[in-house]
Amino acid sequence: MYDLSDTIVAVSSPATGQRAIVRITGPDTIDTCEKIFCSPIPKQTSVLIAGAIAIDHELRIDAKLYLFLSPYSYTGDDVAEIHIHTNASVTEAIMRDLLGQGLRMAGPGEFTARAYLNGKIDLAQAEAVNEVVVSSNKFQLDAAEKLLSGRLAETTAKVRSAMMDCLSLIEAGMDFSGEDIEFITRAEAVRALAEIKVELEQLLSASISYESVIDLPAVGIAGAPNAGKSSLLNKLLGKARSIVSHKRRTTRDVLNGLLTLAHCRCVLFDCAGLTRAPNNILDKLAQQAAIESLRKALVVVLCVDVSKKARSEWSEDIAIRKLIEPKALIPVATKSDLLSEDMLAGRLAELAELFSADFILTNANEGTGIEQLKDIIDQKIIELAVGSTKRNTRYEIRDTKYGVALTARHKQAVTEAIENVGESINELKAGNDEVTAMMLRAAYQAISDIDSAGRIDDEILERIFSRFCIGK
Image 1 (cartoon, rainbow, N blue to C red):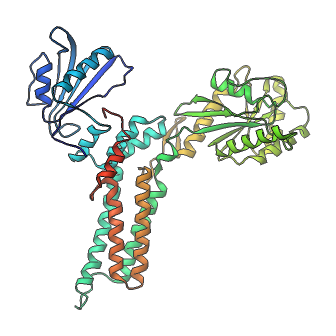
Image 2: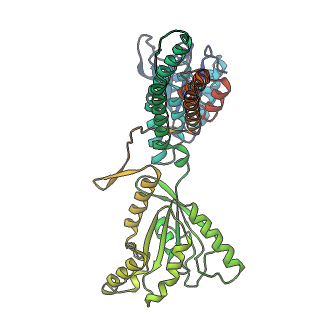
């Protein structure tokens, strides 16, 4: 799959940046740098050299060379990074020159693949590198950093050790079955395997899932027609994304925008106003689309018009609340500018009594309560996505017992191991020691595949690293 005897090169910086970074690794790294860099290059240590790089026989540009010597580099081979402030045309000329000298263009993730193949990182950490690069919010980045720290490998190593200890004793008993020797009683082996199964189940349940944070969280705005949903959406986004009108049912489609909060970004959407009984087929279809979108949302902001003149007018809002099943609900009292301060206190108390929840008072025209609402949305997302603790009005990612992040591949491996350990317990109780040992070995292999303590198929490696961008 990868030829470690090649010297590879790639641009590892964004194409739109003002600074270009050209990365080289392999056995000919130093010789290549000596040919194009106009300053002497020491070969005894990792260094930073300021000088110039030769583009052709006439053109020289200022450059910095970061040299990391084997085995103390990221890849385990000699690594060079050439940093230059220039345009895309000059960067392309440098790449053509390097490729003309016999270097090969790196494939997706090949620098990280070399780090893995040279034993600098395990496979789970290699996957974490890509997750750090593509992270789109704080939750995903935090999960990737936990994985990169190697804590998953530490956890699986302990589980593997316990599995191997138990397997060794079971197989030793099989080897000396004709002798009056008992290495471990059947009851002790069952207890040991049960503890291993619990450890694996806790690892699966207590860990962060990338799939739960890889997409931006969705936050929906719900409410009756003309409850102020569109005005609130526009105020939160800071732009006129939704049409605002005094006419009922102005919004029929699901409208959305990107909302940046203190700790993450989320997709904020507004949809058709909800009613107890839609008037026609169009209203019914719009309401079905709205309810479906709200049920998929992580957080729902329920808008209730606080300026309604009679308590009975909120009966529709109460019915609407029953139509949706949010994971987290934030009740918001809208249109507070239409009432005096003396009346607002009484209305908020009535709403709290009717809905059994405290309402946030907002005024989309003047911005009242908007920042408070953003903070609460941010808090709810954190609590639901990864768990949180409050400290000095800031929120931190909760550090659970395991505190590691699992990709879909990891979850599949852990699930497979749990099933095999469960089967081994059943077979052990039935007196089938040989089948027990076979199932336990299968569980051991499944866990080993997470960080490649066992042999990883080339096809799996290619699938993992093909998701990387070139230059990483």
